Length: 478
Image 1 (cartoon, one colour):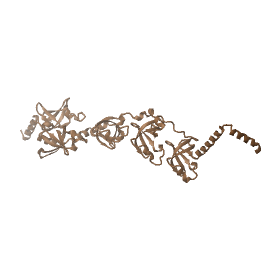
Image 2 (image 1 turned 135 degrees about the horizontal axis):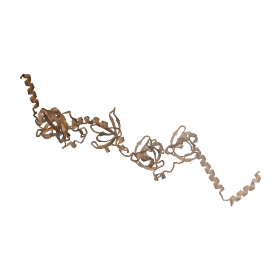
Image 3 (image 1 turned 30 degrees about the horizontal axis):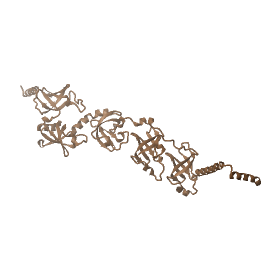
Image 4 (image 1 turned 120 degrees about the vertical axis):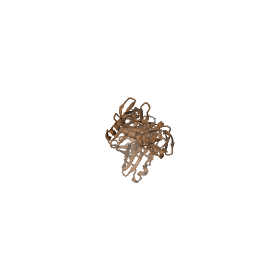
């Protein structure tokens, strides 16, 4: 037999002999069959090994391999057959095994013993390792939350013969997340309801992990139908919550989430429970330059516009009546269901309106005599507050003040003024008033009262004699 033929024969004989494997040895093999509990792996040399099905599943419990795939694993037992594992169990973690796991990237099982400065002490069999705090999880959590737990780690540093070992759990979590992120994203569509875990809370809202590192933003405005001032009062980091997918922007990789959409919208009942003219108790939530927002019930806010407050003589004097947090009685002025807006006006304390249904506002029609408050002065006249949202104008010629320079003194801002309505346009917003007409009306009233008193006086005594005397004198005056 020639030398080449001898070499071939030796190689053939070696290939037919079963290979010898040792516990802790790392090897590669091909999956040839998958059963209900174990999968069979061809490791070469007529050798076949088994690996538990659970070792081949992802975080969602689904198989992440198929027949024909090659895997890397470690021999954990040679008794009664070759048994493999894709992770190094703590009980099998010798120095040599840990070094092999470092070079091959094989996950290692370890127990978090305690939190230390900058990270954690992790026990790998008889060896001690260090896990930086940033590498224990993909989320920010309380450091003590991991103490006592057994996790899988990857050895990222192996120095000084095993006396200096650094591990990471985060890299394994991120790898698994990336593998299933695409599948998770396919299930995230507008309208879907999903569970997630709060990763962080900010002033503007909270970020929620929907699985495999795919995060969405739960804006503070979508946390509740009532105004939420502090997002941290609604959700906490690490908390598991159920949210609704509101919008998905694939181009910007942004997902908008909602929490309040899982409960009934209070506005769906407004048309049944609210009507113009009603009087309701409300709480002032915030004050702006243009008015005060009032919570009438959780999720229902009304606006008391600055124009609905009677003038006080100061531009911002009305704001003192509606400090944030104050409870008060408010009249419903308008309801816009489409825009979800309700206009309200503060009802003065102790007034008749504060007891229930508000009576209708004074009728503002030509000829009506009303009392208003001076709102402001302009070159052409004086504006007068008549009712919430109703302001009229007294032209200078109708102020009844002879000298225009004295108008501001005679009709001070915030002071009461009696007026008669001269004209109202078709919209009811342009109202022309007169204070001078009130003076004329008063004089007419005085004349009428005098006449009525004279006509009702007794027709006898001196009065009757005087009348006869006047009658006797009448012919002489012809």
